[in-house]
Amino acid sequence: TSKSCVANSGCHQRASGRSVLRLIANPMSPADFAQNYNVTTSFLNCATPSSSVFITRPKSNIDPHGGGDLWVCDAPGDAECDLIQSIEDWIAN
Image (cartoon, rainbow, N blue to C red; front, side, top):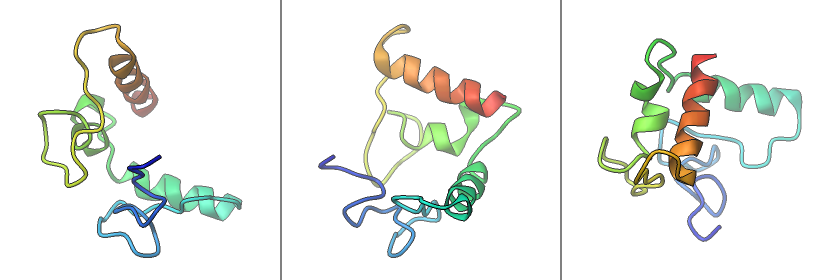
């Protein structure tokens, strides 16, 4: 919570964010959810999910990310690796 990408004036906040990936922090309406979905999908590579900017930017040691590394996958089976795999599975489907 101390380092939020969307809340607390984070880089990905729709109103004042400094990134192209700008999201509504507390989506309430179907239009809000649709907006977040549409913005997010532009950062996906469905043919090769692991190459999606949505994965590579926050993942450690792949793409530079102004917010630092958010996901560190030390070994298959740890919680971070499982999270990344779940997101890649979502992208693929």
